[in-house]
Image 1 (tube, rainbow, N blue to C red):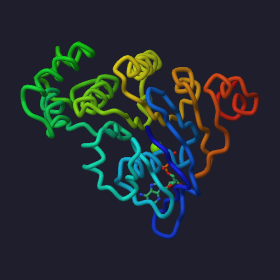
Image 2 (image 1 turned 120 degrees about the vertical axis):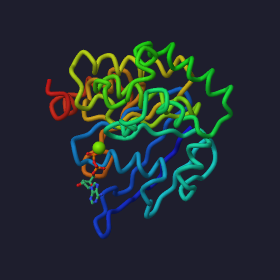
Image 3 (image 1 turned 90 degrees about the horizontal axis):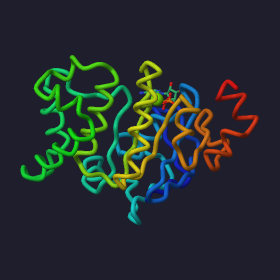
Image 4 (image 1 turned 90 degrees about the vertical axis):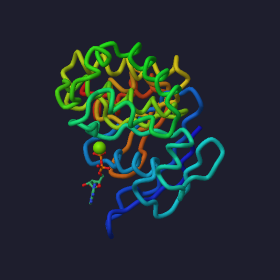
Length: 233
Ligand SMILES: Nc1ncnc2c1ncn2[C@@H]1O[C@H](COP(=O)(O)OP(=O)(O)O)[C@@H](O)[C@H]1O
Ligand SMILES: [Mg+2]
């Protein structure tokens, strides 16, 4: 589904990704976990096309997309849920969902919206309210539902659990796990390593712009070095 090879990226003169290699197979949930500042958001922004890549390649469903503009990546089925959700707080819940579907004809949008409301009944209840009035957890659900309106084959999720109360964190991870049933492949980046790895098939640990460990999620959770450094166990 997604292959990243030797990816480097910089802000001005400062390189923050120093050669990232990773793969995500169709149907997998893969996590990239690491501390604040490791470069997780920069990596996702390179993948969605809003951050320039200095060297290296990104292949999506067999096509090289390293220099393809962001909107074309979205149209090909690569959708990003950005850090801090970035929903339109002054628009209603329904308007936010319609924006997610701007590429498509209306009948299809109505059907997709009905599916989104079936998945997230609370959003249906609040469909005509301003999105800014939703709780943090509901806003995260709206951000995910909006991304699904593009019918992605692969979803890039940037710290969906950030800033949420523990019970909502668990709910959001359940939603992410549910992407398997929808046949949506997931690349998830998280500081909440334990939560992310718990719902993932495989994981990568990122430290200051490099991948330092990778493997089956269950193996990573069981690794004493990772337990000590990232899981606080
Ligand atoms: N817009 C920016 N300009 C300059 N440096 C940035 C910018 N955004 C992030 N950085 C730096 O890049 C590094 C990686 O940041 P980021 O990708 O946001 O990490 P993470 O998402 O893992 O917390 C950090 O050192 C951060 O300070
Ligand atoms: Mg980040």
